[in-house]
Image (cartoon, rainbow, N blue to C red):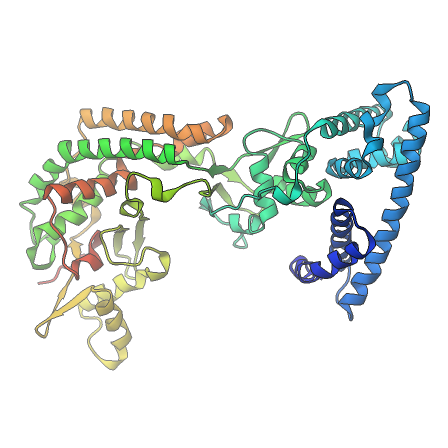
Length: 540
């Protein structure tokens, strides 16, 4: 049976499993432990079979076997502690630090240990095996066994002296979303493949701010280590978590956990520098574009305001860039076992109080720039913001629509039943607008190439270049406070060329609109604003 089906069987029958455990014990800790053991055994055994005729009977049989082993262990625990107390009555260093007072606590702490530590502790204390026998059984050196026996004792002592954690009050984190900068695996694997389960998300978060052992992760999550080990191994195997010195693990992906303080500080900085762009760069842009050549740039009805909405967004993206940001980020990409090469990131916003922000967040929500080619190999650029009426998700975007527009422009398609669906798309998206039985193309078109437009736009001054570097440093100094030190270098690379970022560009549009340098758009213009298509033919 495959893993997904096995997981579904366990989840669908978890009530039955807990019911069995409750029928055998009254102690809540024991009930939880028995249920956890049964669930694990059911899951593992299902992976070894193709199908089961009676799931209930199958689970009941496993439950009985698990409980029988549990009872045997209980007896061994009691004998262990009784003998231990007799043998070490005067020696406080070896009385398991008073564990005889709390059997269930001891069992829980042992469950938090990593696999090798659990095995050694069980063999040495419960099975009464000597160091040499354990070494031979595990095919390890005597020195190795002694070291890990000592480590296991220390971990148990630490766990037993820690304040109790109420598992019912333990709050699991949940990623709001995940993403990656780079390529998928050879079979389409991406970050969603490895973080579609809460346990993987919580393991990554537990080992994010500081390196932790399996035992420390288990204690933090209040989950027996046996349930963590396989998931952790997968995350290590595919490069999302590193194994570091001291037998510890450290998450190397970027987990963004903004706070209201960070967002407010960054908003203040973005607003300040957007004002500088409006004062130092945009006037030059207006001056250049006031005399645009209709033979080179087409804007519907020669509307300069509509043209400037798109040109301001386009120019601040492509002309206020000092570096090839990809070169900064590429050094952080991880080549993974599935063939992917990327930077992984996730974000959490549970602690944010959006309603308490001093600004309106939706004004700056965007869909990142779309730079693509249609089927006619004509390039187009699209930037979705608060000010347009397009849907701000990928589902509404199709490069084919730009191809349909080009085919209409060149006469390759005409209004016949054969092309009815294509024209419906063009009208629905306002690429074509009809006024008094006459159509016009409702989009900025540039002839013949993107280089023509870029060469026309003002370059960054030395002063602006200095301002850009200063902005990068200011944002980095605020942003790095939410990341552990081993992520700071990636954070710095991520915050490169912030002057050309969506955060600045949306605030530039906002300020220009307030100043009256840009005017309100019509309903049709809101459908195609901040779109530029490059074409070798312009409308007449």
